[in-house]
Image 1 (cartoon, rainbow, N blue to C red):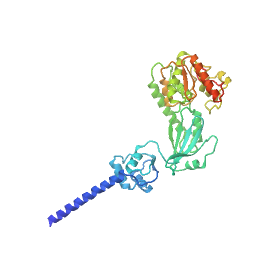
Image 2: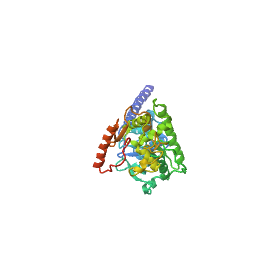
Image 3: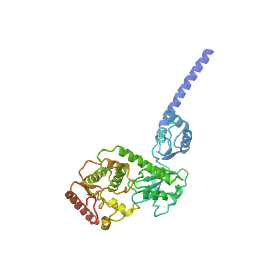
Image 4: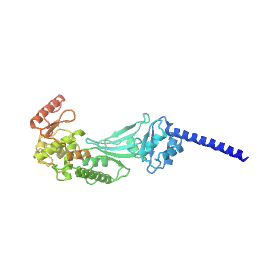
Length: 393
């Protein structure tokens, strides 16, 4: 009898082992195979969310077939405790394994309702981004200029959502006044800004905002980031540059930032101005004159007048020696790096070449020929040909 019992028990154990192995194999296929969702979905992970809550939410959305298998697989991958806060786009048919990778990798959110305050050189814009349910793509849904327009209903409604993401994108080369105006236009923020921060002191970057956040704290964060960047770049500078202080390097970086929109040209532009400082030549750069006219409050939608080029002001580098007294914009790290690591050239002049970039010259003769070519391009395009030219004109 005991022999029969033992034999039956052994048989049952083998059957159970086979069943367990089959179940494990099935679970692995479920975890790594195509998921059940036929459409793209937005997975939102709240700060401090548990894996259990996230897996149940995914199952309810139909993004995964089994919450338990999702949790077990995440644990097996060693990622059960690595959930990252944000909103993440899950492609149609995504496997549970790929979803685990997505929600634990971190990085910028790729879906969900987002209101972005963009500080641009020409204008500030507030825009709404969200996932288009028809295409599954993350798209811009609405935008407006807070200086001239009222918020569209879609943006006004989005700002009141409990799970909306809020951010500010500050472009390189904007002025501190433009940043302050953008913060004041963001109605979901709080706090009165009494004074515009010193020019150049704010770091262009993307900043995460929160509903009810204090505007002055955001400015403090921008200033702290710029201080770190400038200190790091100043510490790593080579010897022999014509700057006595980090502030002077920041002034030069702001000029470089405003003189070219071509990233690869920054070190060349910086070399022209560094060479001029070393030789005691005036910088003769239009952006500094423009700053003296506008005081950084908006843009100058016209060419400089001869009277403005002839005026004796602290920012008229056609009239003063050396650098202007302050930066003329908030430069990014790349411009700061270029100012402190200029190319080794003997260029003293540059002028627009018609492609968005510039022609660099070593002598006044070369420069005058380049200016003549630019005047021809201006005439062909119907542009005024009596406007000032850049550096050395």
